[in-house]
Amino acid sequence: MVLAGSFGPLETVGPVVVWVVVLTFVFLECAFIIGLFLPGDSLLVTAGIVLAGHYTGSTQVWLLSAGAAVAAIAGNQVGYVIGHRTGHSLVARRGGKYLNTANLHKVNALLDRHGFWSVLIARWIPWVRTLCPLVAGAARMNHRSFTIASSIGAVAWAPVLLLLGFYAGGFLERVSWLLPAVLGVMVLLLVVGTGIGVRQYRQELARPVEAYEVE
Image 1: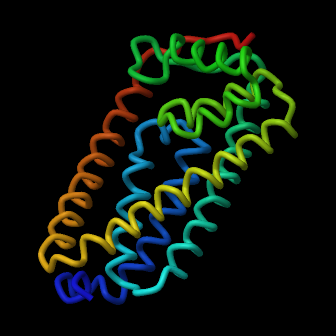
Image 2: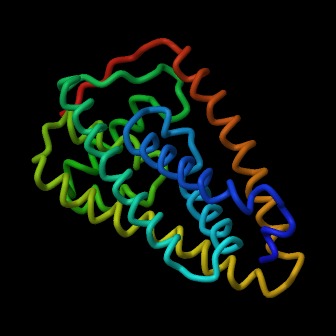
């Protein structure tokens, strides 16, 4: 394969690293506040492209899709429990970029108006994807409804992006230099984006606390 020949060590350790990184990032993005700053969507697409460079069949990417969906479902449940245990008060940050009262109010209003459907929609909006389980738990949204909606959203989200990357990678492989070039750029952007995200997360948590009451 083009990618294996061009990136040497990735031929053996690449898929293992992809599995660990994808499952960890997906879980964190759906469960904890740090997920606000992680590049989940682009990570899934990039992971699909990496797998396209290692395998001629699609079994591996389908298995990872199932694993990522399970990680997202588990992360949603953890986020819901955290929100439920905080009661109706969630911690925001004064002047925060994402973790602020305005964003919490937007998610709260979305859940209040559309309930089940808002949880499905939230799956495709990065920062809302992380805040939604927390707010749903704090608002005491029916747990069964939340679980069904978040699970359907997870099954639609992770596999779609992974498969998009995988089949796009298969198309890119037809040109010998194109797949390594595109993958190199995407991996670089992911590394830089994650570094910036972690830095923003630390800056966000350093801001003064501002309580927000969930209605």
